[in-house]
Length: 292
Image 1 (tube, rainbow, N blue to C red):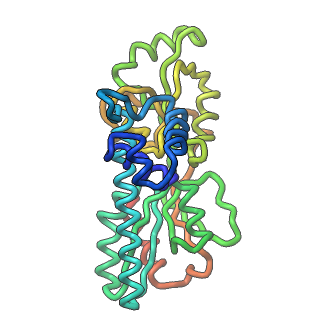
Image 2: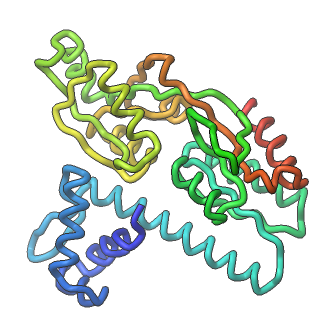
Image 3: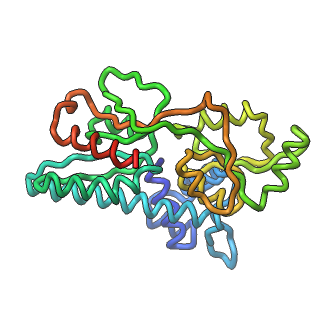
């Protein structure tokens, strides 16, 4: 996730012109054009179209821009809250959370923590599992809810919450094409949506696709699994999504994948926090929340 590139694309949307956006950003027009071209290559689709001398977002562009706005808003809120806590001298605990469980943590767990520890501030930092782990190891987050297949790190303790697997979601508009692909492997394929290359689930998705002998006619890349889900629901292509997310998806059929690709959801905390009262409470509350 490159915040700088997100800000670039939002400026293009605002100014409707590469030259004016580049001027506002204080960069060259060629540098901005290269950034846009690289991003569109990652998505295998245009983010803007040029009409009447204006840059107008495409459908995929609008999804990317909306997601960028949300991420930048979250970043600004976190920074603002941290700054206010530093001024007040209040203790704060930052919890990184995988996007698939982030809403549950925000709606159910954070209010419970605020009631239990009224003199402390609990901040939620949405992130995919790989980034959440990096936040922990670099002391940006104090705890994290993440997915993992291997829990081997001498600096972190992993507490198992539930097991999960990736499920294949095929949008309704591609159901007939999917059936043809199953009947004629290698002769017929359908579009597929992957998370970006550095995303935690990218390698696992590619491995499952190879195992299923899945034929891909065109591939797309999305910033995170929420964007993958949105593109799939709009019919751009099939996708692999964690079970809880897949079962909530609209306008699609859901199919199982081999059990060998299952993984676990964990509450991870640095070992030096293990005996802190707050983290013991978070673990117990999380187990109750996700077992319901």
